[in-house]
Length: 121
Length: 108
Image 1 (cartoon, rainbow over the protein chains, first blue to last red):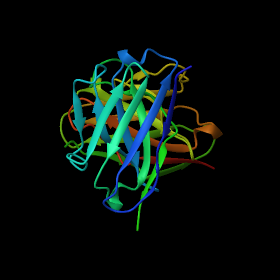
Image 2 (image 1 turned 90 degrees about the vertical axis):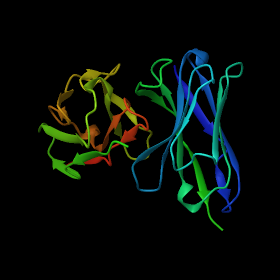
Image 3 (image 1 turned 90 degrees about the horizontal axis):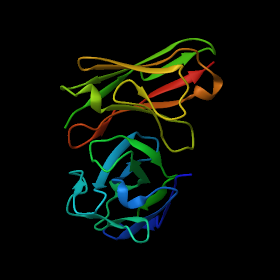
């Protein structure tokens, strides 16, 4: 059974940093591209960042480019999102999402339950 | 970026009725790269349809998708109480990948 379990969220002041983790199990992690997608309270879905199965290629939404860094550890089946210079508008539930293949241009076939990030003073 | 506009905002129907949800792309999107997700209250999204019309694993056949140019449709042929959710379309063919704003389906 595929499982994606996010952790690392919490309350942080504007300008602060957080690192989210996503522990993956139930599939061969190194074979699949992964992404982070966020959902602000009561709002829709927003793609944040993506990474290829090898970790060589990374992609970012303009709203987070230069502030967020996606990475992965294929030996430990874990996806990360380092978030710096956080803003109030980054407040959201952050989902880890698996693509259905190694490719970037593929849908998300599994999602975690999310990790809540709140940016407030 | 490609804007996806979903309509209606809310759909209120009775069990057994047919629901038709629309997603219109602001520019050309290959039908190979359009997905639909279901998000029930308090839950993560679930993939229903990919490639505009292919059902994901385990999705009942009362869910179907179609495409015509820049217009995409999700049809739920016979609504059941558990179909109460927000439905999102997602284009993954052109970067940045984008989502529609969602259609809420309410079961009377």
